[in-house]
Every structure is written in C-alpha cells, then in structure tokens.
Image 1 (cartoon, helix red, strand yellow):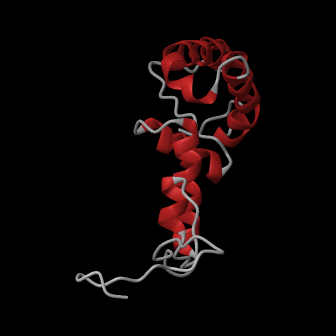
Image 2 (cartoon, rainbow, N blue to C red):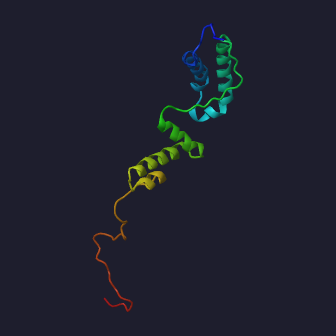
Image 3 (cartoon, rainbow, N blue to C red):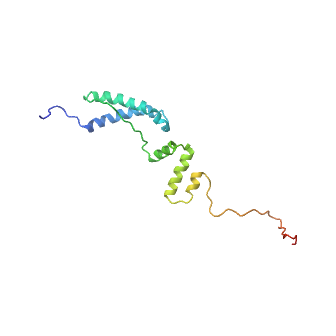
Amino acid sequence: MPFNGNLIDTNEIADYAGPAIEQAINQIVQVTKMENINEHINEIREGVKVHLTDFLRTYGIMLNDLKVLILPKDERMRELISLQAIGLSPIESVRYYLALRMAEKGLVSAPNAAAGVPFSIGGSTAGFFPLGLKPDFQDDNGDR
C-alpha cells in the first residue's frame, strides 16, 4: 500500500540537526581546553542527546543511543593532541611533531629537533690550545 503522508528525507533532518548538535557541543567545547575534552565527553553526549531527542520527537523519531566523536578539523592539531595523549608534554609534542615533519622531508637534523638540541655540520673540535703561548714539547726523557 503506497504511503500518502509527508516524507522527510534524512538529509533534511541532518541539515537541521547539524546546527542543533553543534550548539550542544559548543556549549562545552568552547570553555574546555582541547586536551581535556575527553573528560567531558559524557556531558557533551547528554547535551547532544537532549537537543536531538527534542528535535526528532516532533517527527516521531525516537533516539535510543548516541555516539559522539570530537576531532579537530585541523590535521596538525589532531597530531599534536595525539602526541600529548601518549604522555608527552606540550613542548615535547611540538618538538616531536616538528621532527616527524622534518623526517618526512629527509632532513638529517630531525632527531636533533626531537631532542631539542642544536645541529651542527662537521665534527666537534679535537681540543683547545691557548693562544700566544708556545707549546713546551718534551719527550718522556725530558729532552726537548
């Protein structure tokens, strides 16, 4: 039997629900440091679920469960947060990120960037000699 009522396309629902979801997420995300977002994921999920449930109810759609995954749009930020997530400090994360990018370009100084030490071309000096003094050469017998 053909359906004679109004049809609602899922794309139409997504077009309206998208901003409602963003608003619920932004209420928490805008006041939380990015590396602490996962600590507030349950708050975010509940906020989105309340907004979305109210919206979908008008169309006779019931929302049972909801999964929320928050990722920064910027690839660089995702990588830096991932490095911090494995236990690196913010400065170590930046150094490792830099080193990874340098290694991709084939730069031999990438390990130095990761370690935070300078890179110099050539070997180290063999020693230091005082200037202005003549060296006093003697052999084991005391002869000059």
